[in-house]
Image 1 (tube, helix red, strand yellow):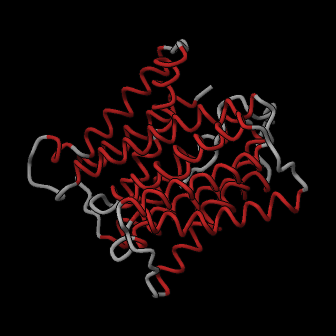
Image 2 (tube, rainbow, N blue to C red):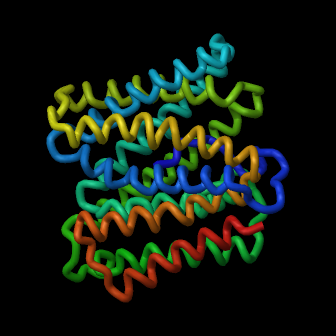
Length: 308
């Protein structure tokens, strides 16, 4: 989520009652693409530096987005203020966010990456209160606390200093920072929308500026711009770029327009379940009663925050 949609609640039209086959297909596609993206991220790690892997991913994704924009005949030229906002979007949504998650993925199972990221709705709540002075309902605040408690339970062995996954606590901190970057990017992207900029060009420009950030970081860290010449790595790059970043983005936007932000947002509750199932089968993630309770609390927190 992988989620690259710079949208906020209320951005879509009025939701309809009930779900038809198209709605269910959009839900299934979005949840599947985002739910499977986390194991694909792990497939990119090991040989190529995380920021370089993110660079290759968004090089392909940005190219696809520009083709999409051109085919739709969207406006391409914008003023300096718009480009400053595009650059900020790229910094937070399409570079820093993913780089932190890629580094977190070196020590954290892919399923838990998805669970941490699913709490973006909770972080949005905190940022809205801290930065914008938004009022927080008691139910929503309770959801935030339940979700945070769930993450605490998931990583309790590392937090308590007991034997557990080596480096997982540091990975958790990176993922939390990455989620916060994503949420800050959402605030910036909201400002872009309020200026009347169409969504697709804004995302294309944001991805392009994100590429510049990833290039600068990689050069500053003297990382080698190499590509692991394996079918697994190359397949992961294409899947993350075209599947998790472009196709899932299209499905989510369509679902958002058809159903409204509240119901569309429940995809963030469902995709961690897919990611955890894959992590259990592929990575051998070992469940404990505490971990199961933590996942349940994290997802319940999301439901309470998103419920309308």
